[in-house]
Length: 312
Image 1: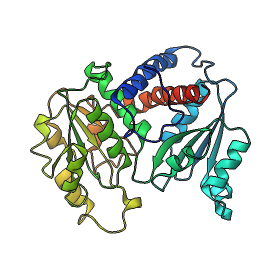
Image 2: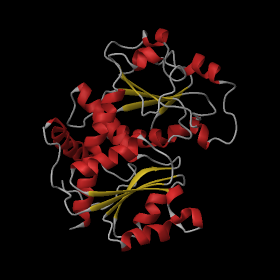
Image 3: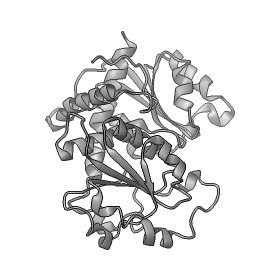
């Protein structure tokens, strides 16, 4: 199939075929990282603006490096160094960037829907690098790519695979995008965490909800651990970090209950000793660093496809 979208604002609107096309394209670009010269001319002459209103390390650097490897010119912006601090609106800032002939704007913003807002108003390609507690599409794509790669299903058919997403689901944009991607590809998804952070209403997304991690461990092929989103919470959702770890942390004892080939994932940043034991995070079953590596290939694919669709 052909890619026809100039923007990537979320996974919810993508078809299973579009997700598979992104994964297939990422496979091609991953090979670029094995070359002596890790660069292709696919976006030569294009300008990408990394506009991060929220702080980020992995995602911003990954997009920057992905653009460099595609031979694009890159400008990095943050809220603290932009005219947003002077009262300028997000739209006016973006319009000025477009007036400077920026071709792609990668946006991270604290408000859900910010990327879609710009996508509807600008002809530049808008890539959502995380908007509030809404979506983080490239994180879900790199997570899905990592799962497909490690279980030998690069065709994107995840039927029969059971994935557990554990932690703060209520405030997690990563969780929402992962749920959309995994269920569209046929995986069975179970959400687990405190009742205050994993309400039963989330079952409307086509997943199962449980609050008993120990009963779940022996039945999953992948466990994706999420950190507590303290920056988005306005009240306490559980008594203490110690109690959270006791009930929902992947300790060494809990890791022993997992299937031998169960994959352990985390989008980062890791709170070692809280959602995951430090030794488990660094173990052979952990694919956390693989996720980082695959994020580069996935973001190259997204930039390449969206830029191409914009020029059609």
